[in-house]
Length: 399
Image (tube, rainbow, N blue to C red):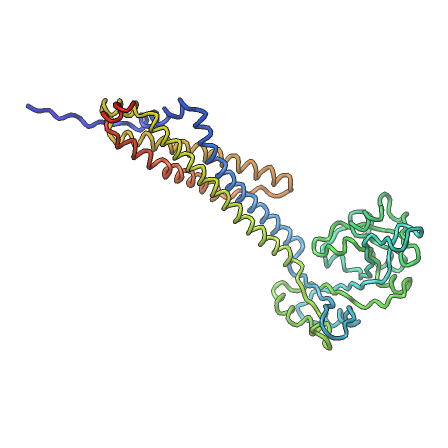
């Protein structure tokens, strides 16, 4: 009477235990193999997290500043080439229905110095601009110290300095008691502004009222730039008619721009860099996968005796393949989990330094772990198949 042998079975817990044999006996190699996967996953998670946090900060910045600001200024077209707009430009623009407010800036041909003893050539790159009282609101600007020009102070020789201009002139301390030499006479400094995010050129300017420019500097106040706040739903329509409205005679000399476009262009550049860094992270992940495959192939060669002995004791090819494939997957999981933790930590640290909201998209975490498993599975597939194809006699004979 013949008896049939029972098929060899290896439980999942046993499979997991055998898969850790190589990792436990070769710890340094295990750490170095997992490190390659960890670096790749950390790079990808970190890049996606920082990109999301940066975008969140940009959206908050755009919401704070408003995307409905347009600037109208004299361009360099062929024509009169005066560099200014018509006197009535602001008034004509304000008649456009969707226009909510306008603010005028007029460049003044004067210099400003710390005192009247400074050489005239040492202007420090500071310009003088005559502005109306609504400028601060139009640019969503804020005062760092002192006060903004208003109807009470604007009729006197007073000046408000941009952040860079104040630094270059050495203005600090109590405002209202310090003076600067502007246009061959003294002007009292009543305020210093925070950085203008929508008009960085005004950070290097000394700002006086249109009234003061007329009375004390004999300036004609021809506008060089008009800031226009528009109904957000009508930006494109207003933009198409602004040039002809501001300067009907020479509309080709008028340039219309949207300052927030520069911020959006910066975000587009950041997206390009994000794609680049994701590519580099993918390359690092691929290199980590190749490292795992290399380690597993070497492990198969080093453990031929173990493979032969297990086959002789009844282990099936599937058991052997599962052991080495499981080891590769465990290496990838260790690297993936470590990479996700490292990437999230790097995102949190950098975002905290920059003052951003910490955002790590779930797709970065889940995608990182899935990518690690895929890389580990692919990397371990060939070594596992190679190990399973070794016959007991061949494996024991070559030890």
